[in-house]
Image (cartoon, rainbow, N blue to C red):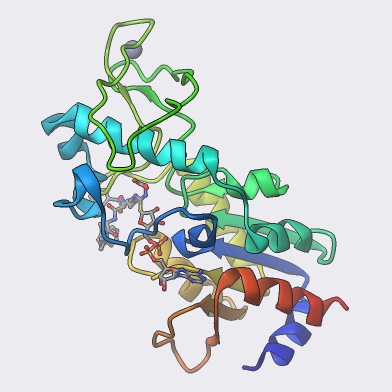
Length: 250
Ligand code: BV8
Ligand code: ZN
């Protein structure tokens, strides 16, 4: 499918789902999960650190990583992909934004009611009583290589605070997953942006949309195989999305 064909299909769409992965935030300077870790965490694969076992084994190493990431997001700005997605709501009858990302860059670009399948860096909670914890502003200067940070204690039960993200091996938030499924089953245009499609069950969504007769378009700067009925626009999200919107809604 060419950009013009994708734009024509988007223009006719009644309900669009935009599904984003780490590649949508990459040009805001947020490392993706495919990017190798550096500094203190160099010897880890993110998928090893993003687990309950890693937190139990070394809470301050794990919490330090999340605080370093939260700081990076605080210092980052939404990019043109986030802005184009936020803009899309003005042009289509119905838009649902579903993200695997744990940053708040969609919201800071103006998207509302973003469905976070994997939680958020900004919603830590007590690992024991579940009470949400109000985070202090991130440390001004977290060394680039990161630092071990003792997780704060819960004000109610003195338990340890954990990041408000979904770790590998944990269930996705039920409401978020159900809302995503409902949107995917109802949409007629599914735009997947900057995801390697390797993390389940989120990675099922494009095929579910396809199964429901939606047009499925992948935007990624690295081409990968998709079924003959899906479409692929190769390029960076911050360039492809504004171009797609300009062509669809001149
Ligand atoms: C679960 C929060 C039930 C943490 C994350 C089958 C069914 C069900 C489960 C499984 C299954 N098979 C395996 C599993 C287990 C596991 C899983 O999927 N493992 C993988 C590694 C195979 N899934 C789970 O554990 C899930 N839970 O299934 O619950 C259950 C319960 C118990 C036991 C069994 C089942 C929970 C998964 C959630 C994990 N948490 N995030 C944190 O952030 O620290 S996932 C994490 O990975 C991030 O959310 C991130 O989004 C995601 C990685 O995916 P991407 O977003 O795609 O990012 P990635 O770096 O991979 O790719 C970036 C892409 O962007 C690349 O393609 C690149 O080319 C592109 N790109 C880069 N720059 C740009 C760009 N594109 C465009 N423009 C650019 N500029
Ligand atoms: Zn508690």
